[in-house]
Image 1 (tube, rainbow, N blue to C red):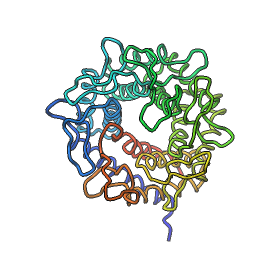
Image 2: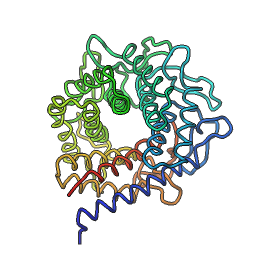
Image 3: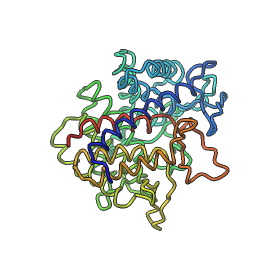
Image 4: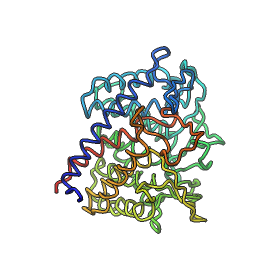
Length: 405
């Protein structure tokens, strides 16, 4: 017999709170670099700490954001200590005191390896510093976040056609290879970077509201509504040229559902009723499309679909399930549509069974259904922090508390 929704809500709240603490504990126990400072660059799938792995800005800023928010949300002393560690290392080593912004990659001792300026990385620095300021009221944190904001607006915004350009040299000159990672198309405007600029600006505006950030956030929401969301399919366009011409070869279900709730969150931070009325239908339609098209045979959200062939990439990535829990719960809270809530239940059951490593802690990058005998993708590393899954637990608990049956 099915449990009543009220009982399911309470059970989910308790399970998410337990998993949130598990995530905090694993990262606290496994990633601190007590020899060189900051955090170990990589922890392997089987828990081996790769002490000489390079240190990336994405992991450091995501750790700063996660532990700042976890400490603020739970009052956990361990989380506060980790937030302090991430803040100190960011300002000491990743902050480019000569040319502004944050650099991309350091060696394990903190020496510069790659000084390029990815717009995506500057955004995560703003995101993390804003939350650290919320936790500590450290003036340096908010001053630096606002300085990075000013730099993004001055250096990366395309004042002619709108939008934010992808990447620059350390000296803020245009570069030939703009790609965030090897799997990306080499194009000057991407959905992914715009999504994380949006996320950062919304967080900055929520925590430290200013007219200049509000103006940039409103304009950025407009880029999503006008150029990034494909209103014929209600998927996101992934890769675009300078004039916003679409060069996408796939639709990403994970990014569609992540964008749904992040756009909604940005509307709440902006507090501009006319924009909210205009954009909320997009928030819901992105979630509806993901639910209609992107669910696999086990209730999980699929990775992506090739636009030209219709071939589905069915592997289950940890971050997609995390974002889908929040995105569908957010859509349920906004609409009351039971199908969204049912999807959350299914995704969480799948995640517990196939992604969470109950024995050794943390979440597998790929579900155990998608792993072969040679599987060796790290548990912690350049592109994997506690940001997606840890954030999902906190956001889901907040949403569950706001649902009144």
